Image (cartoon, rainbow, N blue to C red):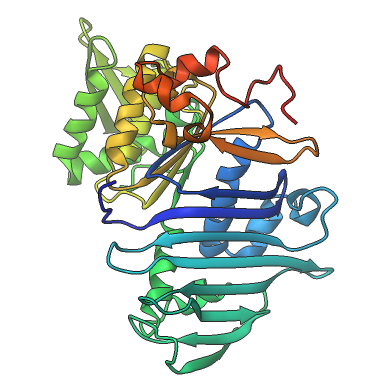
Length: 397
């Protein structure tokens, strides 16, 4: 695998988060896709990432409240803390860093029970260069924290605050700050075709919102600031949408933005609200994938909705190209979308006999690699029931 230039998650473990009682994913690739029956936990994996990112951007309390607090968040029957642990490599020449976060609650609300960062320098032993419990702990300064460096005691204002989010704002903790920037910059998409048809106010906005309701603003921004990138997006869209000629964002008399679609042979464009849902969703996805300043991690849920099946293998390749600059994690139900994937990029999720989510990578399933080498595709192998798990009509527990 080519060396990456942006941070990558290589490992994820989640405990006690809804159906993810104890889920472990190792060897996560730049393009990672989750497949499985309804209720298998695909969306929950993306929600874990969204929850973690929101803890950094809007705070633990708001992210917790939004999801119904622990009565909805914690795995049914569990009493222990929710744990999210990831291993990521910030840059190719730096060691892999482990980030561990444990969240629990009292009658007054959630708090950070434990939070630490760990890495290993050369042949030495792994050591923690940040170690906090309930709002207090120690951290090492500098670009390259060493095991025998001075540990500085820090006290946060509240047990609800994340140490990485708080201390990462200080220049003296660059490794902590890098993780803060990484997680805060994630983009988790919940695009809706209806939202892309809205008429927002006309200010320029650089990045598409999770729901896509500011698509006209982003197109307007690209038109003004990155016309070549917008043209690339429109060229890709035109190759997939027959006779599409132009997409534009125009300021209306009342100050709102109108997204307009022009197709041949008609002289006048139509408003986005009259355009195909599939056209608008494809435009929105391309806008995310070809952002001039791409997010380090992009999560997309079921991109096949409203799109013609024949467009999905090409969208997979668009995602693969974008994974050179952003790590992508995608959920899907479509055999057409997974057809162009490699076995190590596709994970199949299922519920075990206790009702908890488990995951198995297709490269670890018996015979799959050999079938692919003989010219089969993952989509056809899935539909012909060659996967060991993931058939909703069969109980694999």
